[in-house]
Image (cartoon, rainbow, N blue to C red):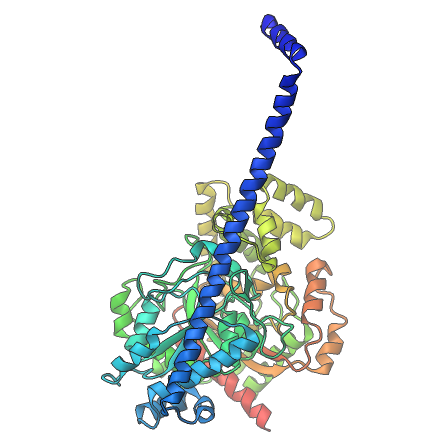
Length: 588
């Protein structure tokens, strides 16, 4: 061996050109690596640009369709059509006072106008015009002639469901999702797809393909996510009914931010077949599908239409439970639990006021309101939710983002998930003295270490659900009233506030149906009280939350209504009651 080293030493000593060759090889490798990275980046940007160009072509086709219809002389009074509630529109379509083609093109025209201001559409579904011909032979559907917008991730045959990710571009769905099939069966006309945040794991609404959607009430604020495009479009009048999905508040937060109603059903009450998930395979936090609209009656009509025999035939995993109108229409006084604080995150003054004023109005209406304290919220967030969602250490998310351009809203999550598990634990240890809450989040995002740990986690989730339900039943509650994140955050802040989802994602963990109803707006007094907000820890999250919601006078405030699993109708009943008492107060 010594002879070998001696020979190598002599060779290098005698042939200095070897040094040059090695140096050249290293430089060439570096240059080649950078060239490959540059080419990969260029391909990525080209694909993203193509996705944007396809959207532009689709919307141009939509504009032409509207123009052709107008020139045909069949367009009616657009303003009159757009002013109708869903129930009024439903009635006039059933009576033939309005034609489906007139209604559809009125909403197409309005949607185009809205997206120029808010950037909420991602695709036009030209098949809607073909569907009009089929409708003339079938007027039996409960949603006959109603235009419906659908979230980007809801499959529609021949169109992409991108989730805001490059990897899903140019991959048109092979068939309609079950939800879309049922909507069509009931006479509804899906006509556009709407924007989402990249990966759908954010309360922002921006991605590199379609850009940023803004809030209709304030263009400097986000409409929420991930069903932000839906909420923005409906609020601005470009759609009368929308379909979203919710894995941690993705229907409820956009609805609250935009001042409309949104409902997340029990996980398996509505079919999710053909609805692309943000984290496929995880079972800790239950995703759900649900409607968004301007009033509760619209949500109810949609649920009645979807909960039909046709959906039960298409998806055998959905229990054949039709809508129980007796429960929804009951006039029985309710026993309602309520809380303003989950002992993990302190709401701002306006969120507290929204809940407490609604509590008082419900009491005045004859209902019984009793305090309720959610059990072990911090434990549920850290040890169950975070570990469950991040059980794979972020592997699926990173795989989907590979080679993609990362939207600024996703930077914090992307960088955190990119870190090796050991480094996450080291950072958690270093942060603990200064910010224990952020340190704990970083630690639990490391996921689980083995299949055994994952099974233990699943068992712990079951035990927690039982604990929560037992406490609910011990208090003899029918339903629950609690905060929802609001008002709308200034754009860019939601991505920095991961744990704000604790108000909503807890009900995905529990698989409880939940919905939001607008009840008030931010006042000058709310804004003044916000100046003294410090939260639990006065850490970076508390300070960013304070900055994100400040300057929101006049923006919508909402509350969250919740029921036990499979009691969706009871949840909707509470939502309607909250809507009724809030509207009554505003008219006084």
